[in-house]
Amino acid sequence: MFCHVKELQFDARVSEPDPRFASILLEQFGGANGELKAAMQYFVQAFSCRRPFPETYDMLMDIATEEMSHLEVVGALITMLLDGVNGELKDAANAVEWKSIMGGGKGMKEDFIHEAVMDPQFLVLTGGGPKLSDSQGTPWSGSYVTANGDPTVDLRSNIAAESRAKIVYEYLMQYTDDPDVKDTLGFLMTREISHMNMFRAALDDMEEDFPPGVLKGDPRYTHKYFNMSNGEDVRGPWNEGQGPWAKGEQWDYVEDPVEQVTSTKGQKHSDTKGESKSFKDIDDENKKLSKKKSQQIKESMPKNGKGWSDYSKPSRGPVKSSIPEQSKSGGPSEERPS
Ligand code: MN
Ligand code: MN
Image (cartoon, rainbow, N blue to C red; front, top):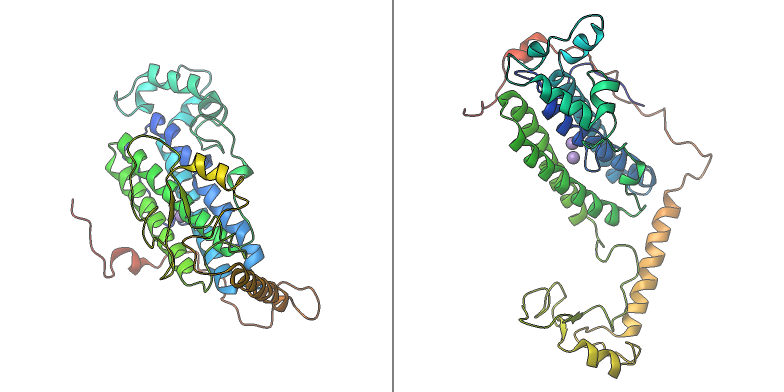
């Protein structure tokens, strides 16, 4: 269950309205790398982890809930950046005081009209609040969310998602001069870095994290690097030496893939160069891991009944909704140098 606390996770502020930046910031509200996508991705992934991987479930739900809190911060920022727009639009009988909306002449009526033409759904239909689309007006989609039911797959997907969210905030900060807005975006960007580290640590903590899933792959193809272009070739740990393999194994650099495909009759007669394990070794490992992973899920299923929660366990009480006065003014913290 969810409870709502009315205070924002970060004390978001805006120095002056800026409808143009509000429009770009929508990207992090309803865009492909935005906060709702992140929240929904970790939320959806959490279900299949609940019983077999309770520790991953706990982390996914915590981060999903924090992403909802970020969504709230971004929504509040967008609304504050549009301050004045809603009130002026409602004053339908009179001409709009554009100068006051645009922050003392910083912007122009034309700017606002241009924005409204670029994304009429946002600035005319919502009339001063966020909407669930990206900055181009494309509606948010569930297809942004990836969940594959295997924590090693999902965690990799999440590291990629956090990398994208981080860089979008970094780019967004180039489009505003408002120190208050930059401050909030800096917080949101930093949290994505933290999440990335959480997912990385959780992945590293898993016993068998590579390759994702169960099957090790065919030893005839796992260690081969195909030199698929002519001209100058570059060699590095991705195609020479031990690479990511265990000691005694190495990359097999196929200099001429055309010759190789002919001589191996389309890989069917390919060798296992570079790989130290035999087909049988790998087959045995596959069977062992297959059994282990399947057992892990089966054992986590409840024996009696089909309940989800155990209400006999003590749980944390209701969340306090008001921030105590003293915590607002003090506590050990380091002010950012300005
Ligand atoms: Mn976030
Ligand atoms: Mn995040």
